[in-house]
Length: 178
Length: 168
Image (cartoon, rainbow over all chains, first blue to last red; front, side, top):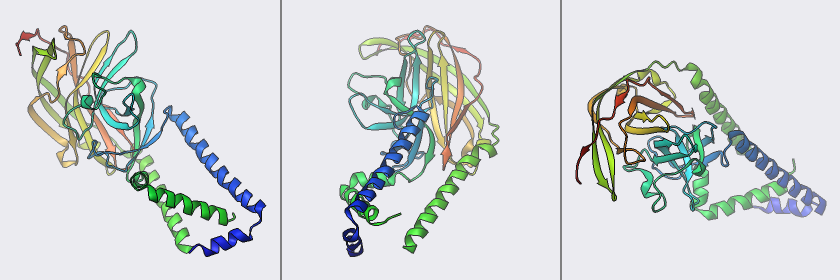
């Protein structure tokens, strides 16, 4: 299946192979620049996320893509935010249902709940934690694209697919000169 | 090789189409929702909750809303909630009741005697009998594109009554 590519690989000189690798790294570097630029523009450390659970159905399903932004003004009830519970890495996408703004300190006490859940998120927070704060929020959901994030979920559930894809991509890039 | 270029082209077309849908939607929607929230009664009780005495409010409301103008061809659903807002120094917002409307037919809502779905209590043990405003908020979720939200004008201020005791 890959005989053509391997034959091409052998015919190329060492210099050409290095050029191809450099091209590959340039592509990766520019993709990274676009990502970081987007993070700066939206003021959020992770401006695009994939929905992982069904707790916001029927609004969001597993595999949807969400566009985030972190506004300067305080959060409001009804905003859908992506937040992380301190100590855990998994981001959660739920809606703010209760809010307490301390005027003196500017601290916000936020309680969240998934639309599809019966109870609020206090069961998810750390033991003894009743509220989350603005610093726990990664961003507020601004825009939405259905199904596109399925690729990430498939790659997470089937890591062999991920390696296969990277290997195929590597071979393709090395053997096609543009 | 041809399959590759066909695939790439169709992918580009799809994305341009989705982008166009997403961008056009806000320009074409003319929303004119009419809503009315009436608070019929509020009762404040004190409970012994988790070791401390706190005040809990129980609110009964009537809701009349015509939200059909918020539905356009790109609207997947409408999340509506009745939000109570109170506090002079500190601002508090609580969702008392919410619902998800999935079609234009269901967007005319007339409900009586709605009780608050979620616990209505303050972060401190007492409401201190402040005034609260009650308004309907909505969040329109598109099939593709930006989320749009809005709220109705808050209705008259309603004061929390004095708490009655209830030993739990």
